[in-house]
Image 1: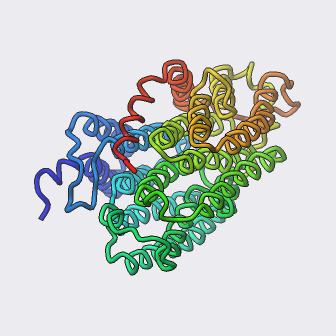
Image 2 (image 1 turned 90 degrees about the horizontal axis):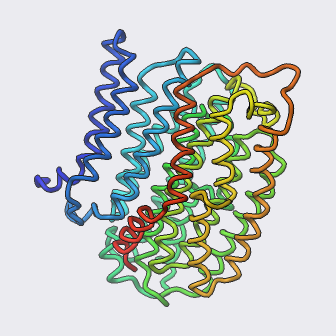
Image 3 (image 1 turned 45 degrees about the horizontal axis):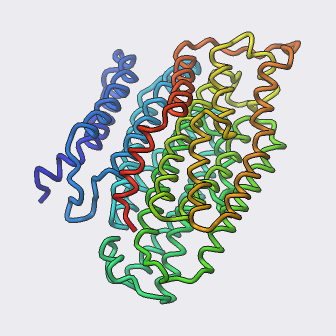
Length: 477
């Protein structure tokens, strides 16, 4: 039976799950109160974040299956921040389409709960349960525009790839259990043997399963179509929250490996994945004309940068990864909030050409999008620069200078397509037939809030770095 301390440790998750249930009941039986669903979801998200901040972090709980520590707290707050911004985007977006119902909010709350379970889990079976709780709502959300063919296609593709990745992951877990006799990461670390084929195969399959969620090469093929076809608020959530959860799981899994217990071929294979992800993501993004597809390929490259921090290892590498995922969350959600406003129809491509001249016609949201583009490119003093600086610095500190050099070159390449967006916003005239972008103060304020945080955290990064340092210390290894 769970103890009171166990229940206290998961209060944020309980708040989200209970609110999701309340939202569904209101949608089903109290339709006239549908207008309060979005505010209730926002309040619940803020309450979950507040409880995570003020309640004690007990460490290992639930019979050692969860570890509610500084790492879990850091990632939970990142996930809840992304959830809060995504809900702010969701309300005006679906209202504009005449689909302002309760189901998207409930599904977002449940998906965030699954991501938080993954972030705090130290048992492979619980990690898998969190993974499925995260994934299943996202399958539904991606296909939620039922009369838009491209949305249905995105939902189906994400479901097929997600099911394949889940099978990959659970089979790897079975092999790891067969080799070690346990699914608990702490116990596994104590008996992690040398080069046992069964163990190494299971380890590779689990890492491959989470590489699907990270959209790393060669598991990236689903990302552009799903990003393009899914509703933009869902894409904003999808682009950051599963990656945050998957990154911390990979960090915990890699932390179980004793130094020297596997060969350098693993490091070379990981380096190849990181380098090709950066190269493919940035090069293919150059030729994209749809901004959502461009951001999808950009995300592949960014996970390649983050993977460099995992390969570097050590406290500085883990800290760099955590800072990077927080920075990426702010940049990407801010960019998608702007895209949600500067898009005419969801069944049409979100063309970069349609942004021509909007910098002067819609100054606030255009400035927010420009700030996010500069930050994604790694231009100082924005938070994206700090993330890349820490990742590449960790690579240099661990004798992976060549990886850092390749990362810097890849970042320079990415500047072309990020700055192209800014060029269209401010240096191209309005087209003859100007797109009909519906006004939405909520979307403007959401984009402005995210962009403001991108600037503020970039100029004053010390609190974020201190929190990431403490979280990295708890990861150990």
